[in-house]
Length: 137
Figure (cartoon, rainbow, N blue to C red):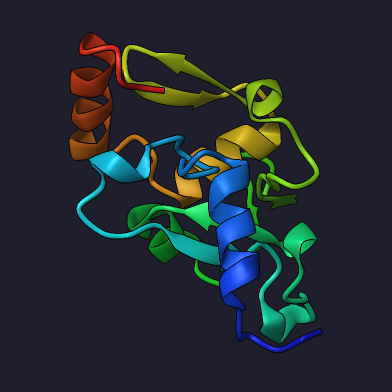
């Protein structure tokens, strides 16, 4: 299936398999102003399919910054670096939390952190507040 339409059943599967957390920044749906969205990891326009293996739950800021991208250019090496793929990779292998900041352990983690603007001040502050209350991640 290569359609952009996502059935109710498939949408529920995507939301429930990650317990309503954004798969990029780990923010829970309950702490987002906007409803999390189902993201095509590889966009349909790039040949991605509308299947459970190509869909991720994403908060609005992460999804807007990611757009249809699945890679970016490393600022130091100028090489093409793929973005984090939550269906194929483990979050803890590419990222770590430090005082509300999401830091990249790997080139993939660093590229994803930069492109998705995971550490702009308001997002870091939001995570710090939630961490202090034991609500994040």
